[in-house]
Length: 283
Image (cartoon, rainbow, N blue to C red):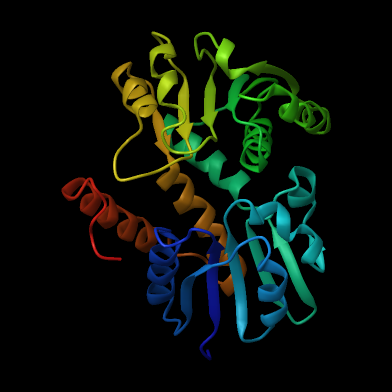
């Protein structure tokens, strides 16, 4: 198969681990493809999208805020991506560009893998109110949650999640993050930036459910450490990164993603992070 191109877009983007995962997948699949990290801002996105076309380009991975910015630049959007108003994957086809959301399935798999068996939570908590929070709500709905509490620093910005919950068949309540109590639910998903959830570490209940902290860095967050100390199952942003990339690879290549090869590459990266917690390892 001829060399094709793909990339992850965002700003800043230099520390993205997406190239690691996609390149590992291409090597395992025997594809001579290129995957790079490109620094692209909201203002630059329309011109960048216009410069890419099939068949040279296979696809794009998007970080925030591009997940919402790209919606008006696509020829088609899948029903799920349209429902949560977030596209993290663009696939170039002969007929045009198609926007997908693999975050929702990635969150579902991360929660279920952390739990260790079939997992069907009835209650959930989502921390945050942005596009990732919308995907988190859809993920919880997809595995059976019936009641989800959304905690946000600006509760008025989380009100649209109530309407989304109606469409997903989930009862959603919105609260102020500063008024939080114990994080008691079958599943908790924190969608706020690295370090922003550290103050919540003291609110881990004695018998916690499953935590997915989508932020990731060279070491576990204070919330994740406190959760694990209370014997609660934990998944982090690297788990989510793996599973959302698995579906991206399948969508872009049309081939079954090599999960074991991608997981091994991520495992090696975790070891490097552990050896160098300041993140000074070469890219």
